[in-house]
Amino acid sequence: MPFPLDREKTQKLTEELENVIAAHLGWFKQFSRLVACGVGIEEFQACDDAYLKSPFGQWYYRDSPHPLTGHPPFQDMAEIQQALHAHAREVVDGLRAGRRPSVEQHDACVDLALKLNNKLRHLQLDVIGDLLTTDPLTGCYSRRGMINRLQAEQERAQRIERPCSLCLIDFDHFKRINDQYGHPAGDTVLKQGMRFVGGVLRKYDMVFRYGGEEFLLCLPATPADDAAQVIERIRSGLEKMPIMLPGRHRLHVTASFGIAEVADGQPVEDSIARADTALLTAKHNGRNRVEIWRGD
Ligand SMILES: Nc1nc2c(ncn2[C@@H]2O[C@H](COP(=O)(O)OP(=O)(O)OP(=O)(O)O)[C@@H](O)[C@H]2O)c(=O)[nH]1
Image (cartoon, rainbow, N blue to C red; front, side, top):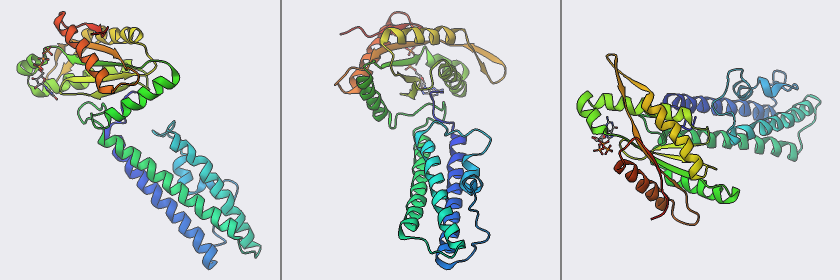
């Protein structure tokens, strides 16, 4: 899905991460108490699969799917946590045999425990960042952070030598929908319409709420002509899709679309302006159309 997680899931995940951080620090406190004061050596889990049984491990390796799987910082944590438990085991085995840990062993444990804590905090900040850059009505990315994300895609397009396309979507005669059915009905159209759009796109495409009833799609590694095929599927799907309004009303809506490739070495705002010019052409040519910017 080219949207961030929905707000409820994001909020839940932020709390979950807070609990995991607290639990991980609790584990580390227990470990350092054992090293410094010799308390709790017998009960401390230092077997091969202790990393699975630790509070972090129970969260990380749980059976139900994680919304963060596939997020590189999430994946990095497995290696750090397993290394931490391997070092902790060496220390505890040594203590059980009456040996004090070496400075290197002690420092490795502290460094890895702190590294894991930092990773968890960064992950939590990413998740909170997503919450701040999500439009509460549609679940699309909001405009906050949009230019940075587009600039990152512009750089990637240059690196992989595959152009990235932008597409501005504007619902047709949206004012009439509000006037005729009321503002909440207009909100329902935006919500259902954009859920449909998100379902057609690939997971690495992005959808931003650009203005009131205007949305910006970013399609990485997609030349404008290829983008036009995808967008045409969205246009024709949207036109056919009944929007269900409260009170069993069904409504059909259309939208107009303007496509432009992201130009190398120019501000991304210029490429958005080109997509906007193409969108205006689509409106002028009768609406419910897809137009590509072909030059001034
Ligand atoms: N329900 C609802 N309406 C919104 C929202 N944001 C903007 N609008 C309305 O969208 C309408 C946009 O109207 P116009 O810009 O005149 O365009 P239009 O009626 O869609 O006409 P064309 O774009 O020319 O086809 C305005 O009436 C805004 O108040 C929103 O979040 N919810």
